[in-house]
Image 1 (tube, rainbow, N blue to C red):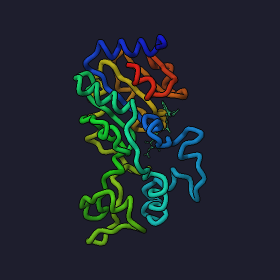
Image 2: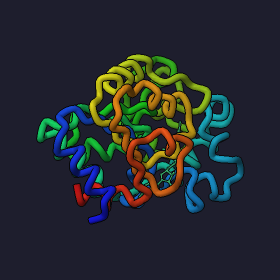
Image 3: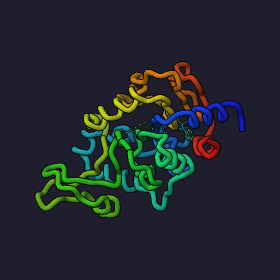
Image 4: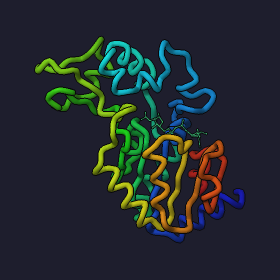
Length: 238
Ligand code: OAD
């Protein structure tokens, strides 16, 4: 085990107030591509840029095309939590980890057994009517055809935060509160490029900020420990 992972292991061993904040890189080892890596979603060819399709105005204008993209690219069959998700759930059970804050919409932290998960960008596993807000099982959209509609005539939409939409304030405040009080903050698998989520890092007041990310991030110089390795492999050793 290298020195940096040994140091992370020690920080984890000595703390009972760890908070984890993660992004798409946490799920790549489960077979879900991230957004900004060379083989990520934003580098794949599509009729419109994915950032455009995944926006509120595009969804309102062309839900048909949105759903073509959603079913082809966001719904991925048979994915399972990897070693990072599983170890985080274990740390929660051990009373060491207080919360997982995630930008991911795949539900894999809950599948791994984590109970306290704050989903900043919602979940692909939930849906609701955009008109009357009645909840629907996500299968209605993920495995349906065309644009799914509610009895009231409204378009059923996934419970995810699209571009141009605000984050849920309650979830955001809870995330800020956990980060403010955290002893150790581990940030992993995120390029820290998308706001307001990336700005959460600024609420941390401690001196044990750990970044575990394959590539560099704009916050590397702020961190007390930076590990440029695969997060599943790192968490397997701590
Ligand atoms: P990105 O694709 O921007 O960043 C993922 C980061 O994870 C990259 O810096 C990779 O180097 C790193 N990475 C990939 N695999 C890894 C692994 N196995 N171990 C460690 N690091 C790894 O994804 P996010 O930062 O999550 O928002 O993107 C944030 C938001 O942008 C998403 O939630 C989504 C997107 O637009 C919305 O849809 C609103």
